[in-house]
Length: 151
Image (tube, rainbow, N blue to C red; front, side, top):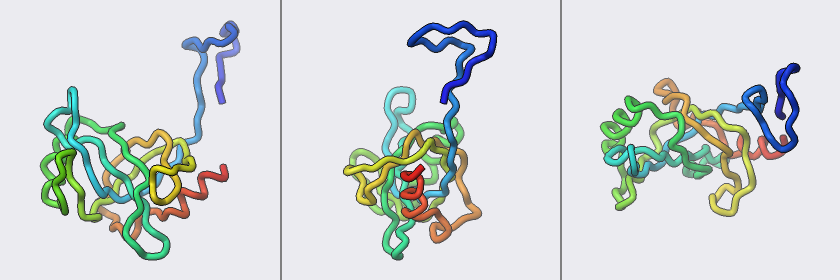
């Protein structure tokens, strides 16, 4: 939905500063299962995290997307210090992590996906905070993400 100030003029096909896009925001607690090395300004830091939802049938967490949005420089430094301790594998692109950390992400919704094994992908995910108070067993399930498809 897009809203505009009542006193703002209308220009077909254009949004000005008086126009604002309003999107639904959902939050999920997901498991971090991997991280990629950054590039550009983030070279040398572990940046793009791989996000997974809990398998409702009790299997390994299922990947549903990646994000590098919402991360401060301090968070990037923390990830770069902390994540190597959780590494299962060290491919050239980054690290495959043991599924031990939970992160809270905000997202606009979900969409069907052939790229990810759960058949769904997150839309515009961004990191809000890590959740040391939650275990991976308390993370949101793949069913919670699939429920966003119906909205």
